[in-house]
Length: 282
Image (cartoon, rainbow, N blue to C red):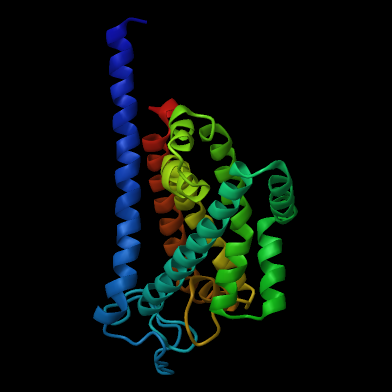
């Protein structure tokens, strides 16, 4: 294969990756925009019941139809997007903060601290994520805040293991040795020198786990452990649709499509960020 052929193939791969990133950004932007401005612009209240319009099919008045209580599905899907984005951002952000701190301390500290911290993370990591989140939420009680805490606990070991692995490599590099030689304190080296140079993979991991957090919140709400009625969430809307699949399938269609779009968007965006921060895929 000649150099020109490799260059053309490389350009095609770059264009394909850019298109994936752009598509992910568009999908994520659509979900965020719908969550932010949708409930305010739509004419129907997501909580208002209309027993004269129960299980109405999509039409000019109710664009996505109504549920068993006559509530507008479009307004409820848009409001449910707020729940999913709130849970995703807060749970992943909290897990990123805790996991990165633990990973930095474990990777930079001595062997005793490393062993204690990472064995604790291994215990959490050993449980299936859904089962662990379900157990934590069941113990704490069903609420939005407890769902956020449960998902954050589940994903903290992921960030901790990744941060530790990055620190073990970076701490031996020349610029870290130079910082030590200049008399920098350990805290300055850890958070001022090492952290900025290991942030890329952590950001990529966060974008990918955002999609997983949305799915986990959907599972928990579907089981009745997430947002409580009458507040809508995509998972609770799917649970409500079970008994009406034959006569009103649109009750399941549209929250399902919303979940698909959000998860696909964040996965494509995360894949694009991985291309940006991982030189092996350039």
